Image 1 (tube, rainbow, N blue to C red):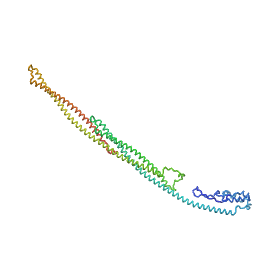
Image 2 (cartoon, rainbow, N blue to C red):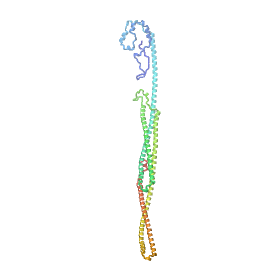
Image 3 (cartoon, rainbow, N blue to C red):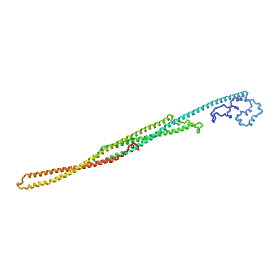
Image 4 (tube, one colour):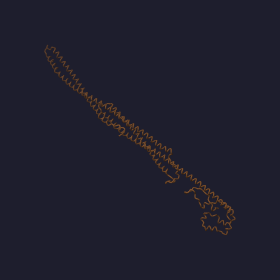
Length: 488
């Protein structure tokens, strides 16, 4: 049996509405029977009570049923069997009534005490949780602020390093362009040296010698080619270093872009408040961990990028210094060798000019001697011709005297003198002819010498023309020192 008006035992549950405390239900289902002994009393006294009455009113109507029943129907039921109402025995005793009241009092006091305790505990819990939530939010704000400061610090470091790297790339690019211009400038001197060697191959005869000029020219070609090879190697190194510098710069820029995005997100999170717009529930987000790093690895990643960039910048600066030294040394080497070749050319041209002057002097003397030898030959021939008449006279006399008769053919002094005269004249003619042959041979030798001298003069003139006009004319266009080190 369930009594009307009994209160339900208090239960605590998390509210589903915006209020913290649960609403107190007044529905009929919240009332329960807390006095089961009344049912036992009824069942014990039931045999001597009227079955008709208890069949009609077998249960006590609940609050719900009463509320659903119309007042007229309730009045009609209560007036059922009015003649037997006085004959019915009472249901409860005064002691039961008193106990029920006392139980209700105790139940009420216990419920109130429990409610008061609940209210005090709840107020303390609300205050503690409010403070905990506030402290936790303040700690989170502090951590986010510190994180923003860390990101700002690394951003400034990255910006500084990027500026340094951009400047280093610019300086290395300028040095590389200077090196390229210097390498292009060496083509002219190399071509000049090779042209000089080519032109000097056109020297003739004895002048086609492996002299100091040719040695210095060959050395100049080797020096220029060696300088070009070193320049090309450093140019390849500069290209590779520029690629490394740009790769390091790319890593720095990608890192700083990520940090700009992270700084913007953390700054927006740092400015969020409980009254901010755009906040919402994201159920289960705390169980998701998309992180790829920890603070140590995060800082180490940026520090490694900066260290790599600094290392590349140091290597780039060292390479720039090496290129500067290379440009200076190659310029000095090429200029020194150029001056050596020019000195050798000057000496050689001086020697050639001296030889040419000497040849011209000898040629003049030879021509004079040829003229005198020719005059001598003419004199010898005339002298030989002049001896023909005396010889004819002497021989004619001897021939005429052979016609003397008999004893008149005397070997007298005139005969001896005529014989001697003929022999002397013939001997003279013979000697004159020998001398004529010698003079003619000498003349041939002089003529041959003249031809040789003239040929040598032409050779020397050709060599002097090649060295002085062609070679030295081209070598006037040798680039200056600023151009050899890459300046325009």
